[in-house]
Image (cartoon, rainbow, N blue to C red; front, side, top):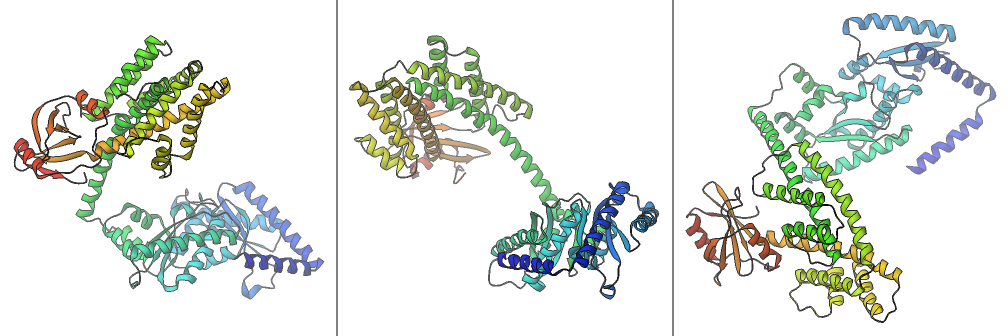
Length: 597
């Protein structure tokens, strides 16, 4: 394509160089005439006119002096009864303007509604004229039509008889299209395709046709971004049967730039009220609406129940880790933040602890089913509160960092090694000997943590040795403090993420009657939640060697969290026959185990 464009440019230069001075003078005069005519027309009808184009001379009048000018007029806002009067008025007015400038000018006004009707009737000659004309003035519609014509011709030449319809979106004919935003639909006949699946066919067609759109824009000279919807005939038919709203809009508002007798009959049938959704399609769309509303509600709950909670919790835990404390449970985090940073160090105001506790309580209420609905306004208020909280925690980090300057490097080393060992224990059951080597092999080389973390770990180990040898400077301590903060934060997030995954793997969900329950299998103990709608009721049991449950007694959320904090989660959970028997004894013979819930 590049070579063709280069050749085209060279030929144009050669042709220009061969134009005689007389012809060049004539072309310049025509250009001035067109510019003057355009100014006069737009002075009076700038709102109504969407495009002015110089048309090529008619074949039988090639030697004529006539200058044919297409004037495209947007009449979308004009009432039908007034259109004829407006048309006559504008024709007379444009002819008078033309005579006053040059007697050879032949204005050819065309309403957008008339252009649409021509397309509906399969009269595409005017589109070909627009494609070959020269733009004088354009709000976007003419250049979009020119590019669409080139794109259409490319598609038809490539796929020949398989192109059934090429349809422009309604916006293109409302005069509000832009040269870089052209929406079209193509319907391709796939009824005799046998060599590939229809999914594969659609993917290939979309890729080829979209690429043609980019090429068409380059040929016409506009940066056309084609938004092409490619339909195969079988899907198009299914969408009509299923009352797909997108297809109904497409039929109602689309204007065919090419049609082999498929699009227009369906459009007319829709206008006649002969295309009606089936009861099944109506029920399906109604169900979709209810499901989507439910999904939105769940997402809003998820924002409060997970996103905001972890957004507030993780930085708080990271602050404690930077201070030198192992990652605690969520409830303990709130308590320690208050004890250390509010009461002991006096580095943080109590209201930020209240924010953290508020978010934690809401998280628990969502998890336990106490909060079943949340409004957007509530989320906005919480977002603002958490945003302010995070800004203050950032300052707290800076305060801790400054205070850390007076701490010795051994404390930094101990904290980093502690989280490193925690991270390694999640990945391997081997005895931790050479921590640095195992960190590289198990976490960095396998792509679970970035290589930068290994570099920081090495710096921390070296800093401890330099400190002991009294070879470290204050600036180096500051640097290692900053690196250690990043290291600790990244590893805490890694530990929390993996522990969460481990907990999910250790869960067995079951159903009985109309309730759902859950068993969390740890190493030697199990926690049973009989009803997920009421997570306050929790039982604890010992896990027998046969995989069953014995000595079942009441427990609590706090006790379960403490067990989880010990990290005694099995890497693999085996469901043995004995646990089925015990669950049947507890919840009845019709208890069912849910897989992939």
